Length: 346
Image 1 (cartoon, helix red, strand yellow):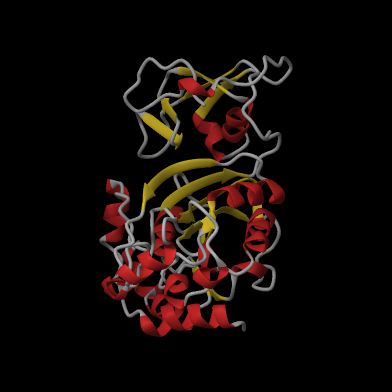
Image 2: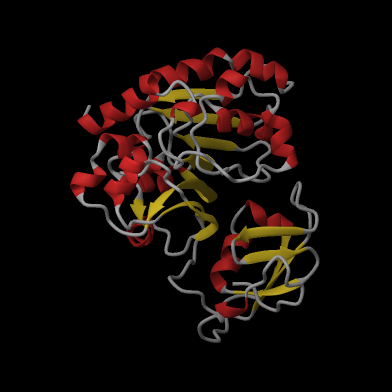
């Protein structure tokens, strides 16, 4: 085990005994939970919730019966939320490198299964790193959704992590994760500071390096769902990072064929049917694709592919194909939550 990995295990296994021990605001989520997710959270044991160190809420929609993999599950707060959502027919698999955190999660499996009305636990906790999921027995194209909450920044080889995620996802599968991103590359002597590493700042990906990495591993297009700037609130950490800006960003990437590196116009139209659970009136695919139930909306080829080639396809009616190309798609007129009259959506 290298020094950085050992430091992370010690920080989250021994130094932190709860979210109150965090030194900065980087691992503190400000994203509101839906009423459905709040109701599930109230059923989760407080010992699990106290060990939550996330920077967002990457909880997927419409996953009944699915297999969901949580990278960096810790004591399992998000994993247990997913357990309730996938139901008895689904599976929730958590991977973490910290034995102390995993022990807490495993301790509550039977009780949480009863709380959710399950005959037995549908959760599997695995100890290991994200870089080699095959070693943990996670097969190629065996997972419907991969989630992660402020944990991928802690991985050493991020290219390998995202390659592994792409490998284990089924065709049409989804990566939905929240993490800390930076406005520039940090100098090595700053990025390696133990405090910054433990607080999810040292390993934060520079946003443009992330864009390049995603294209290399097979995602020429991914979507930002939510972005919020992080107030570090720690004098020493602020001194170290200087003018660097950090954000908590939630990303959605769908493993579908035919994605291009820019939005192209094929004259396609998508209509949201209003059938996604808990989204009867509107569904936000990302921060600039807000679909209004029953309203036909122009979409680029990538968006049509993401919708039609994933589990979201049954909730949409997509008209048109790629037989005629009209040039680049005009992304300037995206639908916002308050713009009922928007004609296109990209």
